[in-house]
Length: 268
Image (cartoon, rainbow, N blue to C red; front, side, top):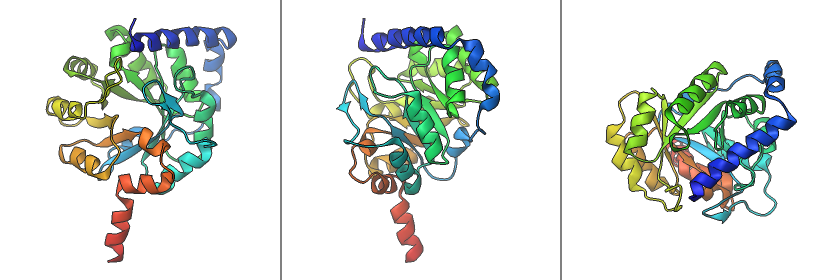
């Protein structure tokens, strides 16, 4: 079993354990407590390239990412001040050190729409996402059979959750397009080997029809890289590692979003 298959198997086991503690019917009964939704998809289509700034503590490929003592509230508030359009919060605990508590803390600390980033394999997780402050969820095409992918995509829509449908190659892109996914994420990372190939986004972009919102994922860390992605029609980028490791996350966010350049142009 490869690394990715292990991650998916762990996600399924985690869902079953949580479902035994809190039945799905209980989650469904609490939907009335849900906070007002924030527009995730719309945030990615504003003029210019939008930044989805990610909070993640560690990853299997990069190890520890979060600086010692970092708190969710301070980090995401820095992202918001720096001009991020949306947030991504890792909630997988065994491999990324995340939690639904991180999701709730992010929701309380800033006004940006939030993506729950996890290995979504069961409708139970959609209800968790809705009740803990998410406005969108990640659906990884490789992790799901076509019927599972379609069922989760439809149920997320019924819960007013946007979906970032993630692909890694041309065949997965075809599956996402057959689903009529509105927001397509193209991940540069090989999910088993952990290697990043920045050419992936550029290779797949010509096959994405007009009208789709495209998010580039993994491996970006500079404004120059983002400008190149914008030139080929990418709408948004999702960046975690470069922001989590930055000594000054607000300054790094401003660098990536071009906020400092915009300020200088306004002044002069």
